[in-house]
Image (cartoon, rainbow, N blue to C red):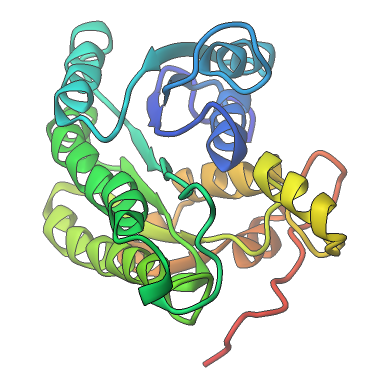
Length: 272
């Protein structure tokens, strides 16, 4: 799929690390110019500048933009910059997310501070809506075939971590379905993406402390390559409005991670 996105522009929110970084690199492997957003800058390992260097090394153009996605003004300024510099947009990947500190995993909702709602739904569902609102006119300028990819989770359809987490992901799935209906006349697709367990930097650290088994975990680059493959899929519009599992995309398009493996299946997947 090399070169499929040459001359195309993408925005990946929350791409200083994790799935966002993996997706930015995967889009770069196809030749895209990628706007990389996040709050951390500089030469450290988990910064937008380091991701930009990885994007360049992968064959794309990386443009780091410091954005706090809890600030609507900064989101607006990001897309103003895209308009000035690129004039259009072809792919928006809504990935940014704020993990509560400490993480709200398990226990009753009444045992966690109310602020985790703002962490998990504000810097998540709301930020995705705001980014999509600003991106839509630029996607229209890019013409039919553009897409919004919303990085969701199996937590949108079954219990994972906390009530607020589930509400944010279920809301994102509904947002994807409804935006797809509204975008269809413009030829723009919108999908929810369901990775399985993913070996992000945070999960690797967490698993190391608890001795958890990550043998069935997907890699961040593997997830990113699945998202990139979906963005150029010939039947993308037929998939618009649906939940797309990374493991399914991997099998259907023979998308392999940096180790040459298809995406492992998620053991907790509820099959209907």
